[in-house]
Length: 389
Image (cartoon, rainbow, N blue to C red; front, side, top):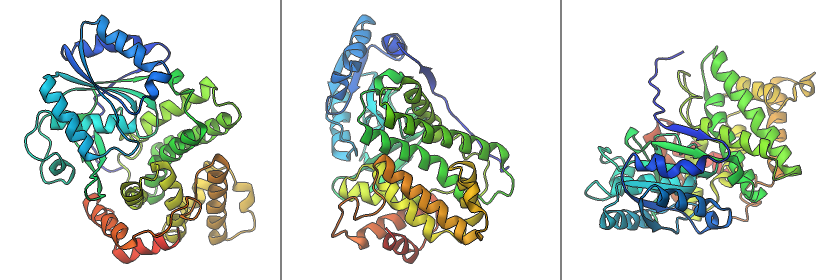
């Protein structure tokens, strides 16, 4: 294992009824809160009523800021920061999916930092301070409720970049699986695809010859996500499956899964960001498009890891008998594509009804991310993967 530093400073409150304590936990950080949410789904599933009642009972003055998009945009975050400053809030309460929490983190920075908010996402300036964030996760996928990352799209340029700072890690994350039972199965599938990708990427790209702890965590949690998604296809209200997905969603990108693993990188997120940044593709859908193409592109480089994934996670080892490694890799890719289609996520640009894509712009953004994240792909390699999509 390689040396590492892991920081997960967020207190996690998991289970039925935990939202009743949002007010008391928020009060620890101030008496004036900005409540950030999306298009209003929290008003349909009961989260809004429960959270606002808890905040008011705790004596907290609440200013609301709604309208966060599924792919959050910079201009809306800037407006939220302005509202937060004018209301002189002490704390940001984010109620919704990963997009809401990501934008709330940006608002927390913009409310107290001077200058252009985008400078922090563009890595021109480090985050030195931010308002405290309370996260109420209702669409588990990104682990943003417990991690140090905020992702946002600059709607003026289409660039989708991120901040990474311990200053924006939520103080408390509330995870009640009951709040997820009304998520449409389509978006549940996108979420599960995202959760899996957070574990798969480091697993596939690892060059560590022996990483039993990492491999065991990834394989076990990935199987849990796949099995839970299968259960939810049968019964979208299965609370045990919803709970498993919610917990997997929190830990998959918390930093826990890839620590100490040599060579772990995230090329698929690098390739996907231009899709959701330029074309507003749901992030999980974009991942199910690029992952099979990337596996095909990288199958010789990561063959043994791909075969292991097929054996330990997809559980198709019996089908490997009599096949050489190349054929085994191809079978893993085919099986993963079949599963994506089964759960309803696209596996190509055509299946997502995407046409007239600007490959020059996509390649340019992905290449900038490659250098920023240390993935180190050339423009030619990035184009080659997009050609396979």
